[in-house]
Image (cartoon, rainbow, N blue to C red; front, side, top):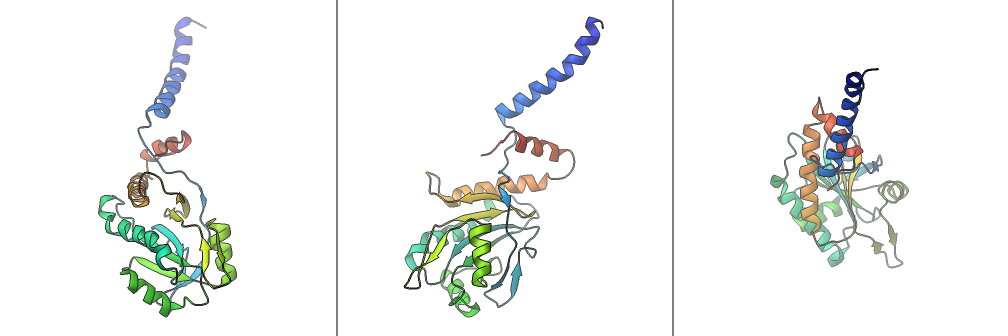
Length: 222
């Protein structure tokens, strides 16, 4: 084998390696991690309508978890959802709708009427921000096992739980979990992540999708 032939066979490999290193170092594209598949569910919302995980397929959904009698303990969490909803214009999600679903642990008291009252109290636009609950056993499977959100009912009927937001893409994959307060507010992070996710969705077809798969491979996370 001549030197020229050797060089011709080596150069493409070197270029591929160099491109891979450059991609990993400079991270020209950022993506949100694919954490795990979101759980399937069947719940009832504030309008006494059944809502399932298949109903929101194709939409980006931000889930939160609470109950209507939570009081001041949940004020900050509800304010965060309201803020994200009001700032959706800062995130370019293209033709993909963004929805908000708050799941109540308290299926005994939080019937549709109570959930409607709760939504009204929060000033929520239920066309986009829904409130739902379901069978207690199903709720445990969905919330605790599926979304991995802890909650426990106390002897006085209130609940202890860890405030969590979960961001799910239109393919039903969890892309963000917001469990701990950092220097950046949850609302700032979520709005930023909605923008990143929206860009990936818009480029999920054709040649551009290969670059996004490479970004996942190289863990180019924000």
